[in-house]
Amino acid sequence: MIQNIIINGLINGSIYALLAIGFSLIFGVARIVNIAHTAFYMLAAYFIYVGFGYLGLSPYVAMPLAVLAVGLFAVICYKLFIDPIREHEAAVLIATIALAMVIQEALLIGFGGHYLGVPPLIKGYAEIVGVKVTYQHLLALAVALLALFGSWLFLMKTKPGLALRSTAQDREVANLMGINEARVAMLTMGISAMIAAIAGAIVVPLFVLDPHMWMHPLIMMLAIVVLGGLGSMKGSFVGAYIMAFAEVLVVFLVPMGSFLKGSVALSIMILVLLIRPEGLFGIAFEEER
Image (tube, rainbow, N blue to C red; front, side):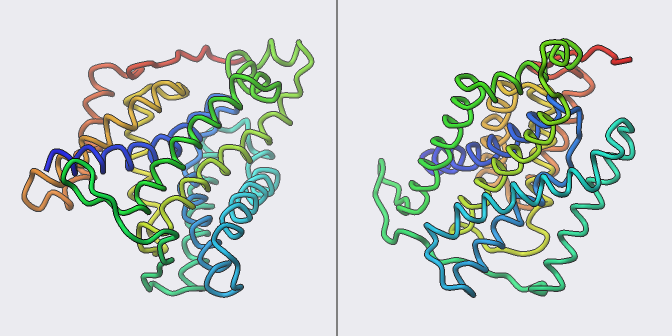
């Protein structure tokens, strides 16, 4: 029991961390609350399914192509629908909700409401402290941790990452330093969507696909960023594992717990908003005039 909780908590936490970090990144840089973020995650999963099931591509080819395609799609959506209304935060929020619903309905029209799936890349299992864990789950955990480490390297050790962090810290100063804030915001949209797409690629062999699969990760992601602090990368990372282990504990220890996991996430989010609105590692953003 304990071993199952630890293993599932680590896997789910790593996936949630990727989603939450991408969400916090686009909010920190461009102040965009992107509700469509988990829809990009779902879109990547379907792209991989199409590449593997219809085009006959190897999963190792379909997955990176899907990540790139989702990043490009996110940039196009940003230029067409978000950039023209970016100064109006409520309009941007509504636009991202609409974009998520459009993606959902398009997938419903294209694939119906059927549950779809991709076979595991690696078959078999290993026994870890008495618990059988499939090689596919171990691969998913390793890829998720590698993606998290790669995201940290990009943000901390590269010039584009420095530009993103500088813009997130102070947009006005970044502009004065010669950083093209509008271009950085567009780049951030693509990068955050690609991080979400990597999470989608990880879950493809683990879970079934359906056009509503973006909703539960959306609830968890919002709860995580509220818990960790909106705009905080560290908070997203720590909050993801806290929420993942809370979710797994509910599923394993509470009768009918799988139906309550979303409620637990929302309850934690409400409590945090009441007790510490800025979250564990919250960043206070000054009002921009």
